[in-house]
Amino acid sequence: MKVKDLMSTNITCINENTSVSQIAKQMRKENVGSLPVCDDNGHLKGIVTDRDLVLRVLAKYYTANPDPALELSVENRDISHMRSRDIMTLDPVTVSPDTNTHDAALLFSAHKVRRLPVVENSKIVGMLSLGDLAVKPICVDEAGDALSSISLPDGLQAKN
Image (cartoon, rainbow, N blue to C red; front, top):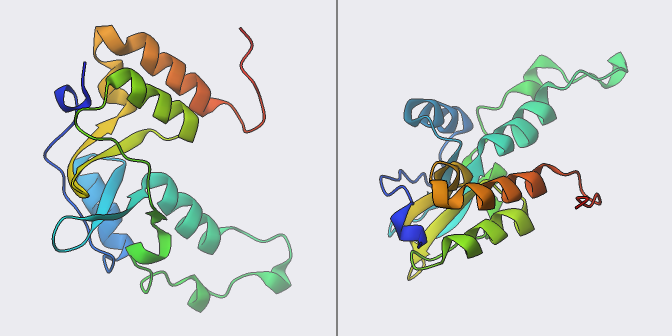
C-alpha cells in the first residue's frame, strides 16, 4: 500500500509569521496535532506540532521556578510576539505519495515522529499520521511497532 492511499489531503498550511495563539486555535478548529509551515507557493518550510507548542512555548514561558528570584515576571511571560518561525521544526522528515506504507512506518520509528508531511516537487500534498496507519487492518502491526519505538525513551532498546 502507498502513502497516497492513506494520507489526508485537506491540509491547511500556516506561514512563518503565524502567531502561536493562531496556531493553537487552528489546531483546535481542525482537530489536528500539527500544521505545516509553507511559503506562498506551498513549499514546505517546517512543521509546528502540538508538542512544539508545549515545549517551546508553554514550558519555556510558564514553568514555575523553585527560586522566586529567578521567577519570570508577568511581562516576560507574554508570548504574543512569538511566531511559527520561532518554534517550528525545520527540515521535517517527509515522504512522497508513492512511498510504501511499510517504509513510512520505519520513518516514524527511526525519527520518533507521529506525523509525516507528504511532499511532491517540494510542495506539500498531504499529511500521513501514525493514526492513518493504525486504522487500516493491513498496517496495524507496522503502526504498533512504530508507536512502540516512538514511545521508548532515548537510549532504551526494545526487548524481543
